[in-house]
Image 1 (cartoon, rainbow, N blue to C red):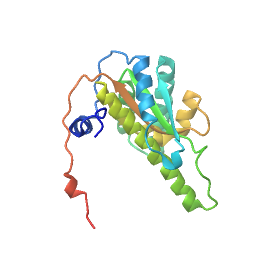
Image 2 (image 1 turned 90 degrees about the vertical axis):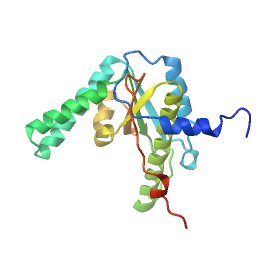
Image 3 (image 1 turned 60 degrees about the horizontal axis):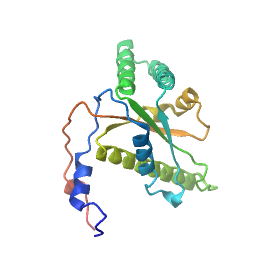
Length: 206
C-alpha cells in the first residue's frame, strides 16, 4: 500500500459512519469547501468515461425560494390529481418545504445525456440512460463521503426526480438537465444511529 494512501480501516470508518442528517447548524459552507466537494464528485467512475453528472449549487435565497415554491405547487397539484385528502396534502407540502429549508446549502444533482451513446432501439437506449443515472449516483456518493470527511453532514433528497421539468423551469436550467436529487449540506446539529443488514444477508456466492 502506498504511504500516501489512507489506511483501509480509515476508509471503512468513513464509509460506515456517514449518516443522513436532518438538523443543521446555521453556519454557512464556504466556497472553497464547496468547490472541493464538487471536485471530489467529478472523480467518480462513469459509463464510457462520459461524466454525465451536472451540479447546481443553490446558494441565493431567491433561487431556493423559487425552487421550493415551484416544487410545493407541483406536489400539491399531483396529490390533488391523486385525490388525496386535503390534510394529507397539507402534511406532505409542509414536510417537503421543511426538507428543503433545513440546511444552509443545497446541491442539486442531475445528469445530461448529451455525451452518452445513442442507439436505434429503445432497449439499449434505456440501458444507456440507466448507466448515466448510475454514474451520477456514484458522483453524488463521492460528494457526500468527501463532505463527511470534511466534518459536514448531508442528506439525499429525491423529490426533484418526480418533477424534473418543474425544477428546470424554476432554476432556468438547460433542457438536457435531468434532475436526480438534491443534497442538503451543512454542519450537523444532531447525531443519528444507523443500522444495516449484515452483508451476508444480501450476498450470494456462486
